[in-house]
Length: 302
Image (cartoon, rainbow, N blue to C red; front, side, top):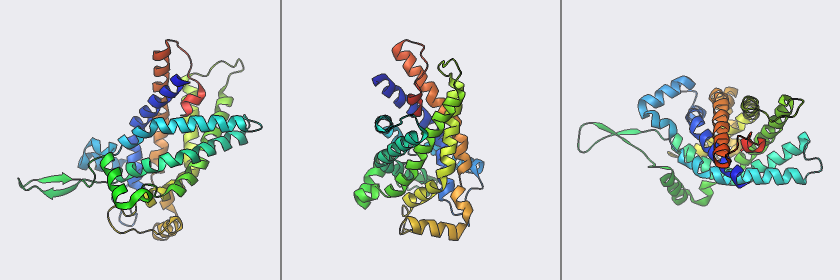
């Protein structure tokens, strides 16, 4: 169990490292106003960030999710397993969905402030200011790093500010994790050979990637609203009073397309993230145990 947990944490970190640039692009696309867009699409956003902010601009705020990997994995792993075992038919699709949804809601308490800090760092662009020592422009940033961002939000907005968007985060995570776990277990069953041998890396990565895509497709509009709510007011007066106000104003101003903006980068991210997670988990287990065992399915789900 301890090795599974450690392997899950290592895999989670690997997944964050690989998928983070695409997540930054997703956030930038979600928060821009389509009436005067700064980015034409995923590739244009990537080129803009690298050109204006260097490649490190794609990794702004990454320390926030990396710091929360262990706690989030522990919550998901523990809650999902215990809830599933407590249900009348643990292996049914309904039980798997309910266990996943419960795990999603519980980890929202930790996930919300972590994502808030991450998001605020991601949307922060380097503004230019004349240096007092030279005629050259030098970049200035509102937040020096994730810890500084956390401290400033807590100081200016209190604990309530750190949990801005908690309701919509839980509303996203419940169906997201329910769909993910249900699809994953269903696909693993479909890929399983009659002789019941442990699955290799390809079907597991495929199951994880497809499950992630299905989960995001169904919950993506909620994620757009969550992102806009948490980003709102970072650089001035707030635009939205609450979740419904954000939905109505976004739809009225930018149309139905606003709820799918950035989805392509999220779908593209699914497979490399799962591949990196699986590879890291496998390497950790085999290195620490000294046995060429196939990774347990539940570990990959972390």
